[in-house]
Length: 164
Image 1: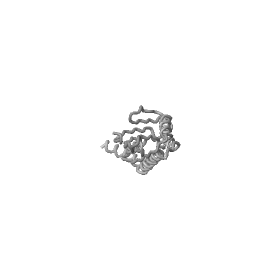
Image 2 (image 1 turned 180 degrees about the horizontal axis):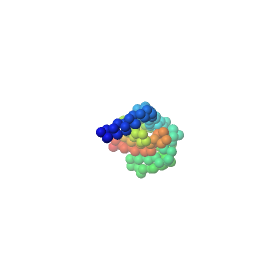
Image 3 (image 1 turned 45 degrees about the vertical axis):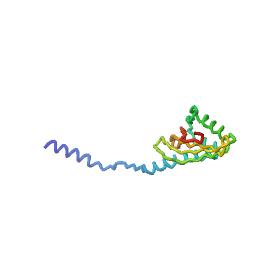
Image 4 (image 1 turned 90 degrees about the horizontal axis):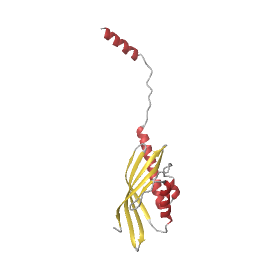
């Protein structure tokens, strides 16, 4: 009986506390959708910069800490924004006629890291007297830093080339 009275007393003390619990409503779905939209915006800016040979737009998509990895077939990897930009500057400056088409195959986007798998077809109307193409699958990794997405890795693998 003593235990029952004590239990009732404790319950009545806690039940008298009418202070409302703070309620914090966070629309996580809206936050996730905004995050995905921002990711895709930066991805598209970067992909559109290549055929336009827009070095400034491309540079603005790279990580502010300078650690951009570029991994291409038959080439040693590079690890800095400066090396990434120099590669593209040299490529864009070459007097070649080429096209670069992309198709996003899938993405995986978290809070701080995201990845896109993109099909890229690079082609030249004539290379050594013949049409040339290189169909690649490219994995792009982006990092969310202070609410902004930036490229941190570009890893391309050739699937089929006209010279194969």
